[in-house]
Amino acid sequence: MTLSEANQDYLKAIYKLRAHGTVTTQALAERLKVAPPSATAMIKKLAALQLVTHTPYYGVQLTPTGEKIALEIIRHHRLVETYLTEVLGLGWDQAHIEAERWEHILSEEVEARMDAALGSPTRDPHGAAIPTLDGEIAVDSWTRLSDASGGENLIVRRVSDEDTELLGHLREIGLVPGARVAVRRAVGAEGTLHLEIEGTAQVFGIAPARFVYVETLSDP
Amino acid sequence: MTLSEANQDYLKAIYKLRAHGTVTTQALAERLKVAPPSATAMIKKLAALQLVTHTPYYGVQLTPTGEKIALEIIRHHRLVETYLTEVLGLGWDQAHIEAERWEHILSEEVEARMDAALGSPTRDPHGAAIPTLDGEIAVDSWTRLSDASGGENLIVRRVSDEDTELLGHLREIGLVPGARVAVRRAVGAEGTLHLEIEGTAQVFGIAPARFVYVETLSDP
DNA sequence: TTCAAATGTTAGACTTAGCTAAAATTCCTC
DNA sequence: GAGGAATTTTAGCTAAGTCTAACATTTGAA
Image (tube, rainbow over all chains, first blue to last red):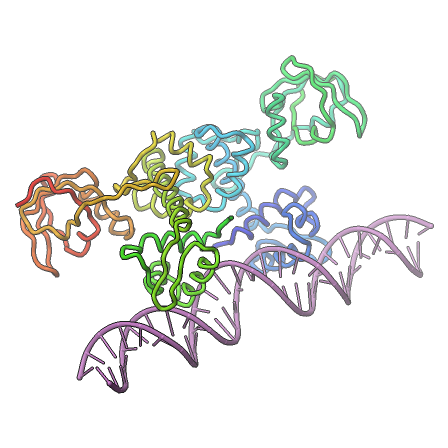
């Protein structure tokens, strides 16, 4: 079975949106930047291929086969991202954009070579887990930087690659996997965070902090 | 102007078929494995984009812009082919198949990185010239192994990558760029060539020998 | 030089994946 | 629980690129 790029993009998007098991048409349409009817149409096709189950008006869910395929694509994406940054020296944001295209055309053979060249990495440059060849993926239990209450000592474990622009910014200010962060002061829902990143003071918005996952070293 | 993969494939095919300046619909259709009407339709689109000129019933020709784009794609292809064999260790035939897909999605940025990693190569693994960034390409004046009359000492300069299967075979028997070949005996049109490749005797068909380009070291 | 074969083009249909407009359904508020 | 708002789906169109069948043109052989 050969799936079109569009098919693959939808499966990947459903996978990434599937926090509560089921994904709405609108969420899918937004993420893929298509109109809702386009998403409905594709959902039907994927359902016919048994890659998703669809309850009209109530959302879509990946079948085990669909999930496996989504994980393959994500593996490709993250492996390529890692390769492009580690071996060819591209920036994170550039690598992410490239990987969006490469993920669809990567053969098993080249995948294996890149994997070997990188020493079978388990994390991509932003700290996201790279699924294994047989579709296993590590489950992270980190918290979001936006949930910090103030006073914690944290270590950045992962930054989401969903917002390309943000990605570049995070890197600039040093909010990268492995960075140590102290939260000096946290302000409410619409507020800001006062951070010390590797010893440098920074004021950071709550909104982008939702995309930074951290491990807590010491609580306030 | 962003061209579709199909557009790019046609431009590349026209470039490769353009030995006598003009390319027939049939030749194009055959090379791309599509029906002739499909080729006609695409020719019209490319003509509307000013990438080719079309004289109905008399063939198609690249405009300077069309040729430049074709050369960009060929540069991508050959650079990728070189990268995949030299850096990732793929076989020639495998690399060629991969490059057919990669050539369409390679960004200028990654192209530049691969070029640098390889030390700006001028030839791909089969000996074909890699066009420069500004669309210059070396013109080869080598002869075909099939034209050998017997008694020559030759050096292989290039093997055509058009026939994927043949490519693998040529490599196995050592008919690769740089190989020294002595032609012991040549037989007529439908016949065979008796070769000595790097000292090893081989009988080789005239047909596949058309895909091997050689430089003559000494005439009979 | 004529006419059949080969080649090329036109006509019309199909598939994929997108769109807008309108209808159906669910959700939410009062 | 009724009704408007939000969401989802259906209906119908479009564009790219493919196909087959039919028509047009060129070529080549008698």
